[in-house]
Amino acid sequence: MKFKTILSLLFLLIIYQTNLKSQTEVFTLESAIRTALHNNREVIIAKMNVEKSEAAVREAFGYALPSVDVSGQFYHFLKKPKMAFPDFAALLGNATYGILFDEGVLPRDNSKFKPVNSILQSFSQSNNFETKVTLTQTLFNSAVFRGIGASQIYLDLSKEDLNRVTASTILSVKKAFYGVLLTKKLLEITEASFSNAQENLSNVKAYHQQGFVSEFDMLQAEVRVENIRPMVIQMRNTLENAKNGLKLVLGIDQNAVIDVSGELKYEKEIFPDEITAAALAMENNYGIKTLYLKRQVDEEFIALDRSEYWPALYAFGNYSYAGSGEEWKFQTYSSAIVGLSLSMNLFSGTRTKNKVEQSTIGLLQTEQQINQTKDKIAAGVKMKLHDLNRVESTIEAQERNVNLAKRAYEIANVRYREGTGSQLEIQNADVALQQARTNLLQSIYDYVIAKSELEELLGSIEDEYLEFIKNRN
Image 1: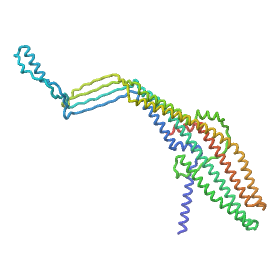
Image 2 (image 1 turned 180 degrees about the vertical axis):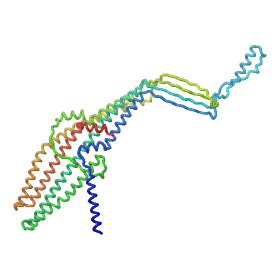
Image 3 (image 1 turned 30 degrees about the horizontal axis):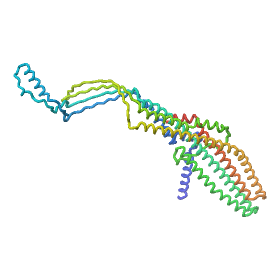
């Protein structure tokens, strides 16, 4: 029974491992970039900023369009308001007696005249309603018109910032992707060295059993195997860490099982000289282009703040329909007016002056950021060109060095089999071969990354990725 249970568990384990391997998602550089552009949170936020800016442009245009407002109200007086007013009864009585006395109808009797005093009287009816439609059109308002221009510039700024984030994301993907490729190759080198050491140990044990080599040689071979074993484990862990870093850039679940497909190879290219490259960077770098647009936005903000000095002119029309009554039978009436409204601030406690001053300082700060960024980019372009030239000059020599190290390792093995060499020679030759391969791979990786960083500084993004971002939902 126990045997059947163990077999069942092993069978399930095999099925699980098979399913796990089948679920591994393999990324090429192309698919990795597209996945990152779709999932990366910075790209998503930058894309949302573009959509938000587009809505802001539409809002700014809305302030220049006519505004129509409708209002209505109904109210019932629980207690009517009163106001002091001359006593109409006294006035009427005095006027009537005055006429009768003047016409001689009655003999004059001044005692008939009553004093006219103010009494509290109500002129309101219990139930009242009013509906009103108001149309307002801006004829001149500097803030409105400046706001339209500023919102459009801000939209351009958000689009350029999206390009900047896209370029930065693509560079991050390339670094992480090629980092995984480099680690895989280094793991292969380490595993090949470990395999060579195991094969050598097997041969030495066979020679030792036949009495051809000493126990010391066999111990040396075994020590070499055990020294390489932890390096293999460490490289496997490093590979997993590199993959986890790639998952983070791609914006996918850390529990996902992934692998990469591609080559880490050297392809020599011709790059512009330092002056030309720096000029291209000043013209096309997305960081600088973003700051240029930010400077325009700052200028528009200064103009917006200054617009508070200017008058505002509006045309308006108003139509109202109202009624009142003691019961629910209303006496109704309507009215309509048209006119112009002009307003201008004459004094605001220096608020406008200080707002303009703050906006001007903001513009000066942006100018300093532009100059600082230019200096950094110019230095970065020079450094990357120097790195590319340095790596180019060493790769060919390192390729020859790998071939020499291979040959030396083969000779060391032949010498040992012939009895003229030692385990130390084999060990040294293997270490030299491993180091030569590692140096070559590291140089190729440095070249590819330096090239990618230079492209990012020069503002070079494939149009397909910009279209992909533009059409992304």
